[in-house]
Each structure stands twice: as structure tokens, then as C-alpha cells.
Image (cartoon, rainbow, N blue to C red):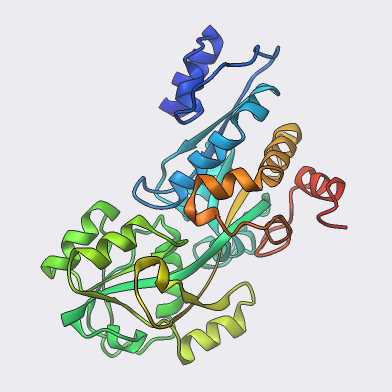
Length: 331
């Protein structure tokens, strides 16, 4: 049991009303009467500077009162990212996790770093939003396409991140005569490193708009890199959970089309998760779409029908599937 879970568990035991402000991510207001039993639910996210953490905070905030009436407390927890979240859900450290759909597929099918040890107990709850591969490069590095990265310094995230896992899939098809020089900087280090020349480009797997992408584009002369070509064609052909798309440049005050590809951010849990809790979380999210759209810019294109059918690269948890059938979202 982690320190956050221990502290919150103690507060729950003591029935401290201030718990609402701790777990409800800043919401204020009257707190309903406590049910007889209470369950603390953790959602693994990513670094605080990324998108997963504020998205999970928004989810917990929007559905707070509905869950509280059922004795469920929801909390977003920072983690290194997708790979960590899957392992955390598998081990029981985390109840839920937000992960990239390609990383989810790799784990469930026992590929990549899970080769020979598939996470067969991984279950989908729903998907959230598209995550196109996004590369920001310093202008004087002259990086406009993937092939221009040869021999350049690229921040591709640490080994516990989905960003690094996706980069490894891309890199397998690139020319290795002049390998890309990789770094694993923390998100709060990347803008300075990019502008001072410590790195030439920074890779994101991210929903848009992203505050970090915005800050890098504004901090010094930079450009977005086109992520397409034969290497990407083969990846998409081999992995149908990837789709082509474009970076939404208008969100950053830019013009022109920047092609890319990617999967979606997905919410996952374990097959052994409490069915009552999974059903409550699933129902609360898909029945509060309007509030979620207003709570976080990256969620403003949410559509319930897409969330319960697209990019679910592990089987739906049975309790979530029943909720969606009851709501008429799936057959």
C-alpha cells in the first residue's frame, strides 16, 4: 500500500469531512452522508506536467458526488506513465490506469517488454481521446520529417513510459546507420533543454491541446515534425489499432497540416477488480459527458459511442460491458 493510499485510508477510517477536499481534487460543497462501507479507488496517470494527470483529476471531480453516494472515493495519482500503470494494475498497486492503447495491446498480448508474460488479466473500461505522436523540434536543427532525426538528439521519455514504448516501435523501422541519440528527460526539463540546444527534438504521445507542447512552441523558435512515410505506413498496416491523422495546429495558433498517427488514451483495470466499483466508474463517466467536456479541453470531443468501442485493445471488463449494454451503447 502506497503512502497516498495509506493516508487517505486513515482519513476515511476517522471519517474526517475534509477528505472531500483531498480526494475530490479541490471540489467544495456539502458532503453527503457516508454509506456504511467506503472504497478508495486510485487512477494511475502520468507526470504532473502531462495530460493524463489533469484528465484523471477532472474525471474524479466530475463524478465525485455520484461515486460518494455509493461509498467510492476516486483519486488521481501521478506515475511514470502507461507501462508503469499497466504493471501497477496487474500487481494491485493501482485500481485503474490511463494508458496508451498501443501499450495496452502490447501488454495484453505479451509482446515487447512483456514478451512471454502477457498481462492476461488486463481489462478495458473505456477509451478517452486520440493521442497523435507529436514531435517538437528546434528550428535550427532542421528537423521536418522522421528521417531528419538521424543522428539528432531526441527526448523520447523513460523506460516506464508509453512514449518510449511507441518510439521503440517507430525506431525499429528507421535507418540505423545514423541512430537517433535518445535522452530521458523529465517533462519539466524538456523546454529548457530544447531551447538551449541540449536536445534537438522532443517526442510526445499526447492529447491536444497540451500545455507542454504549447509552452515549447512559444518558448523559442520551434516547429512540429511530420510523422509519416514508409515506416509509419508499415506500422499502421501491421497494427490496426493505429490510425492516421493530423496534429490540430489551430489549437496552437499555427496554420498548415502536420500529418501523424497514433492510438487513443484508454482507461484500464484488472479482471479481478471489484465489479461494483468498475460498474460505478463506467456508468458515471459515460453519463457525465457534457460535464467532462467542459472540465478539460482535451476531453471536449468525447462521444460515448466511440469511448465504448474504439481502441479497446484488451477485452472489456464484464461489469463495464453490462453498463454499456444497459445504456444501449453496445449490443
